[in-house]
Image: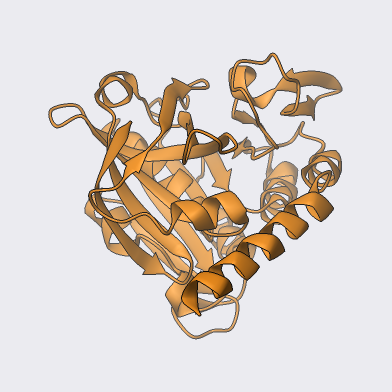
Length: 279
């Protein structure tokens, strides 16, 4: 069992967790993730580790309540326990001194982008973090990103905060005015594809943190297979970061919808149970 030290909502349906997981905290590097089960009978879900404190043995997770399991997890409070936390899994981000690096995060993908921003800044890069959300309350971790020394450009789809419009428009402006060496992207599949489309004509190396369906995290189940440059790879052991110019994003999007109907029914059943409990 893994104790939750602290849990707080930071945006609608987005919760920050501080969890005791000393072995994960000791070995984790930016870009890696864990797989957890909320309870002994629950499904396994992957979550990117946003930060880790080796001294206290605490890891930071950000959870967006979309399906049954994530919403069940978001009901957990400080002092509660999580059944299983396995990790760190996946390959760490390739952190080097590139020069000027741009990291693009969309929605809760900003939580995936945050440790990459911190690591790139610590390595001596000039980092520009472009983060977006549907509206002001969905722009995440702006103060934390600024604290790393990065230049932060916040965007909102509805123009309620920061720069109005999509993150890709901000990225175009940065590329036109700076000598960008590398771009990292994390967020919804359409956003990552759009980022790759922007950088491809400029031949800027672009890395995407992929988010396929994942079960065991060891490459055995095959659920997280992705097509990269015509090769079938597994996000859990070969990634989760890949060359965005080689990723088959349409195929990734289709595979992510494979269990949509089942997931929707389970969510509806869960919400019905919650209504009964509240009545």
